[in-house]
Length: 92
Image (cartoon, rainbow, N blue to C red; front, side):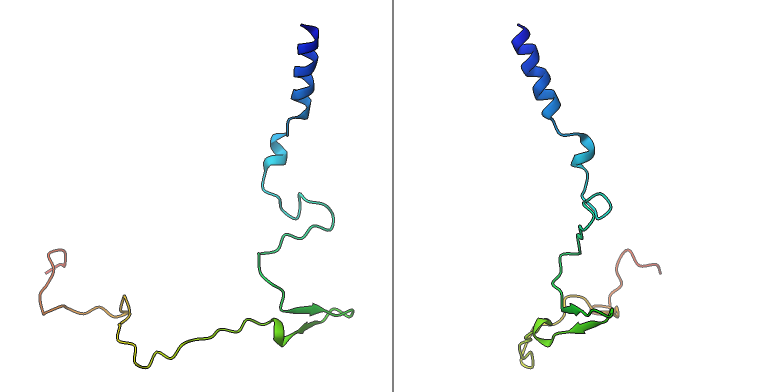
């Protein structure tokens, strides 16, 4: 019986605190912890406080030629009547 009580107390001491389950931020982490925004750096910092952008690190987007593309945009910025009929929801 006393052995089970001691083992139970040991397990209770090993449990994580609820404060350690919170979201880790730069204020809650170690002194040199930097979380970031999950993006890649595009350059590096100089000793004098400047920033040098490296062209090889910039994203390169390849867009296909859409000249003969037959589909139209899903939604238009300007509204218009379809077949000249009014809808039931529109005020008269």
